[in-house]
Length: 224
Image (tube, rainbow, N blue to C red; front, side, top):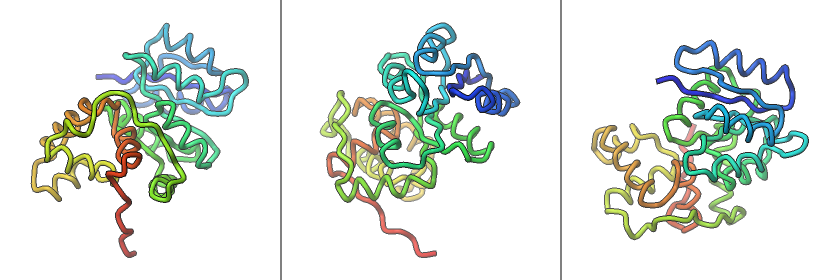
């Protein structure tokens, strides 16, 4: 299955660079490019991408406003925000408006391609450089995010709640499976079920909900 990608950035050279990296992969294809948020909305409607690589700072409608519009649609694309600005405010707001991932523009090509595939698969992706600070901010109460509309935690089974807490702690399906003594495929099924019950799109939004409700806290850092 080929993942359809749209690249949104106000700098033509940057767009061309990202597009070249993506198009070189057999399972990825760039179906559209846009130079601002408004153009992105038009082109997304015409080309129906699965994943949008979205710049934040652009003239006219910026990337955050465009992300909000794109992700509001039931069948809208998933958005991976790309930016040169390693600032908490952008990370938090991008997640609040529905982005499924956040990656800095200086990421390695392999990391970019991996992030596209992760987001396309329905999971969330945060740049390693900002993941720890994001979780620390949840714990310190500096980030307040309204819970996503939809289901409730009360509808989760005991096992789904265990998986939910580990998703919020940033564990992969394989790591969760190792902790709980179950197969990775079983963990994936639990994750899909809990996302549906919670009414969230992916693991990133599930993590936001877990911290907002006080159901998760950062795990202590492992010693180097």
